[in-house]
Image (cartoon, rainbow, N blue to C red; front, side, top):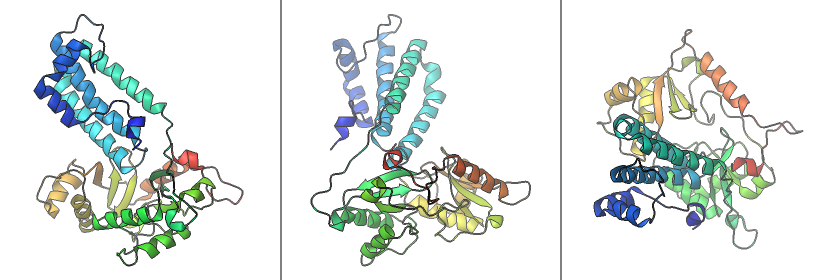
Length: 339
């Protein structure tokens, strides 16, 4: 409901395609409607149309990154697709584009980046009536990046979301069913050590008051509640292509393939290929393909061990560690988590 309060100029690929088919870009430029005033006599009419098309494509991704909280799935998906679009533009479009178009497009990109940097928007969820637990807002907190990635206005909404994730095939630390999901979430909300889908689920009020503690996550594998092999035996890593964050380690191609198959089935974007083990090894493990920005790669160290990976992960963890409180427990403010 607050989308139009945040995004001043909505845009999508369907609108862009329709405007191209209907010739709306020509009319907009001629009438000065939904068009940028380009005080550049060196640009031809076709170059002005091209600029407005490219601007609208950039606007799609800008809106996604502006509206969604940094670190959440939608934000990361927007980053991945923006990177794909920029790569396509650089390879197939940039060399065919006039200098004036490039200059104006670069100026637009800078203005978008500046708007995102200056946006300190925090979403607030109004919980209706009373202090009943089912009406208390629930936050989904990522201990790795120390940020809230999602919030639900009630415990009931959080329960529904957990079952949607479970039914979509996402790996979970506990066995969730329609019968036990309510009790499992209740335990996770009360027990600092319990994780669900790799995240802490916490009442928003507890976050605001800093009334919570964080369980130290495994440096090698992210969530140490999941069964993972010893660091010495790691041969394959699953990581985020953009951020470099490492999610999990695997002892064999078979275990990595099983994880890849689960991820492939729940992918946001369609994945080409037949989906067998040879497809995984040739195109992902030994190739350069990814699924929604996630890649699987072999671990290569001089010692054949995982020590350098652990050291690198420690360095990343300590570089973003929150200041310790008097009771030596890591805490961070509610406002910092929403940045």
